[in-house]
Length: 116
Image (cartoon, rainbow, N blue to C red; front, top):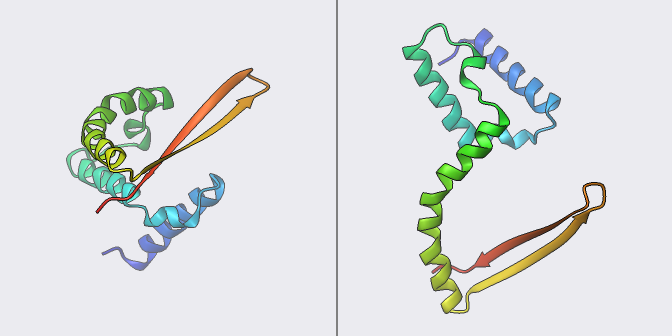
């Protein structure tokens, strides 16, 4: 457990981050944030002189990494979504919009399904 001073410091840093970055307050309850923090703590045990800049990646690296990580999830979801479609439990909701400044058109597709 953290002592009172360190607990207050952590609370203050999280609050400043949420406010500065316009994040929702409930982000601190997010399981993904907990996983990231636990990974940082685990790495800190091995590498005592870590700096935050040693751990963070640039946005383009993260975007490329999404493409590598998504395939196992697609493999898991594809049979599930196919089954729901075959049983008429799948609803696809398109959302079309355009960006006049960039002269680009966009299509978003949301899939809702019932899973027994």
